[in-house]
Length: 286
Length: 256
Ligand SMILES: Nc1ncnc2c1ncn2[C@@H]1O[C@H](COP(=O)(O)OP(=O)(O)O)[C@@H](O)[C@H]1O
Ligand SMILES: [Mg+2]
Image 1: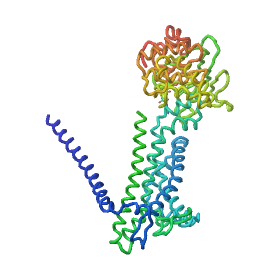
Image 2: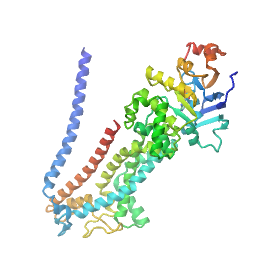
Image 3: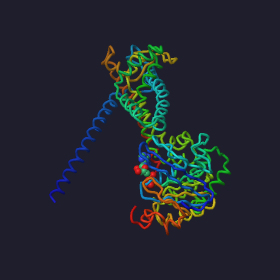
Image 4: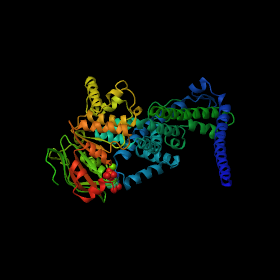
């Protein structure tokens, strides 16, 4: 009797703590969103979204930064998505599962924990200097791509692991080649999961400042990048400048909040896309 | 072993199999005769699955494994360098222990093997799907719902779907690895009936831990223990008058 009651109390306390933790996290997040929404919401207008900054960035919009972020994320995706998926397919389906593969996998996991500024410096050395792409949207995109790769590889491998082995063996037993079995009986069921993880990785890349700081992002540009060799403006860097580096910080505060809001909506939008993909997948499985 | 001679479709000679250092098969010599059902029985872990999976080289996909000895299909070594393993697996089909339908429609499941072999003709595909489903005694139950997901079928129906899928690529041999252990008794009876009809057109090898099942469906029975073939003979002989003491003890249920 007594023990049963003690168990009940313990369970109540446990659930209470878990709920309290969740509520706290949500509250902080919502408060944060609310604050930015309130202070930045007034700045958002069609003009703000579609025009370039004017008068020493004290007026006008942030269109070049939005455009630049889209462009650099696109380059990131072009590098990280196919390469990440191929690497994952190789690691999970073809590589002999031994010590070497384990070591490679461990290294990839570790790479996803490397601070983004380190990727930034690496990008300067590799893309800007050695490969002579200069400080450009290409160098920045490739740097972000490198940073995102470990995430896309890991997410893609996890997605491949959820496909039961019996699909592979079943196909082989019917006279499929290994590649046929993967292409027709593994990838179709793994790709939505792969995409979910990949989009999350890209959303993270879109919000990063450090990797693009020295590789291609510009403080201010009066024009949009015309080629991959040009510099570009980006939302996170623009926000950083508006919040800390501008000579009239108080005056441009609304612009900073507006920029933050746009960036957050963009990143949240990408994350929602990932959630929708996953939801669709789950429903289809049933 | 004094087995009557027929045409051996599959013949193993001193077959050894290793998972890394572990030897799972020891000098196994079994013949599977054309248009006959051969049952493999034996206690759990004795190497029945390992044996049957070497016959269509499914074990090739498990890293660190090794085969020694010879497996002949129509007298030709299946490990010969000019043998295409993909073609071998098309000729020697396999039905697994757990029904493994693909998450596709019933139609697409059956058509899978043909499509990967490049067949596009819709009319021909339909013809084969219907014929295979009839052959697996499933047609009447699914003829109005070929577009439905195969997961919607019951376990027993799923297993017959897997049999139909194997039939669709017109194999010569069909290997069954405990095909009834995951389905209910009524479904089991259906699959057993089916196996008896398949015998007319195919060579059948069936692994089972159910001795009544072996006695009911098979013409020949191989009894294995600890990776070794203990006795191989006509089924009736194995079950009424086995030569080996171990066989007798096993079929009378004294161990296993
Ligand atoms: N993938 C594997 N790796 C290592 N050992 C295995 C593997 N599969 C089976 N074995 C071992 O080989 C032996 C025979 O297994 P198996 O052929 O599955 O037996 P059965 O089908 O008769 O129950 C067992 O001792 C089992 O532990
Ligand atoms: Mg087994």
